Length: 141
Image (cartoon, rainbow, N blue to C red):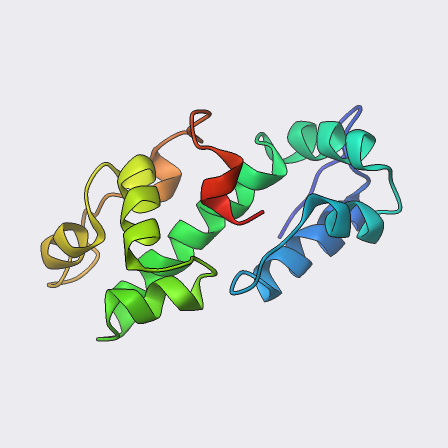
């Protein structure tokens, strides 16, 4: 992962530490306070710096990473959607379905069926911008 220095953003060491923590703990609740402590910053300063560095607030970034992980798991396994939801830190399958539809534009079941043959031209979380209308309560952050 290459992290460039962004004026007003996190230092590269902070960005790497925070991104690694998020990746390792996607299956759990991740609080902004916890991330701010990792970067040795106050919550408000951290949130501003994080947004400048990653292009989205912490909650939106975490939600997008969860959806990316869910997509990878759906392509690589036959686990149930409920199991994938829990493994990505979401409350249940209904929560997963709501978030997935906001990010990808279709339900996880429909996306999985469409991409069952392989990831040739599948919808991707990265193809859509972070959705600012996603509520903090939806992301588990």
